[in-house]
Image (cartoon, rainbow, N blue to C red):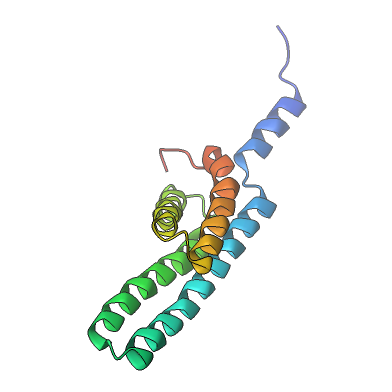
Length: 135
């Protein structure tokens, strides 16, 4: 019988740890995304309410964009914890943002958001193995 080598145990331990560079990169991209969405709230409200005098639509659009920015902010804060919810909530938020950006891809802001969201997906998908189902 062979003894278990220490290198195999070390490799398994490293595989279970979250890569700190990827985690910090994803968190910073989520926070950048949140800041851009919250700035967009100010712009869209000013453009719709003040410039075009369309107050009701401005209120409604600003609320939806604000909720999206807050969801991005929460995703950036909770991402990296070793709980399953802290992986799937940011993943769902970023996938919904990709769909939102694709619906209005002709706008420069939404094109930038689409690219940032693709980077976020590219960053967080390999981290899935660090979130076991039983936690």
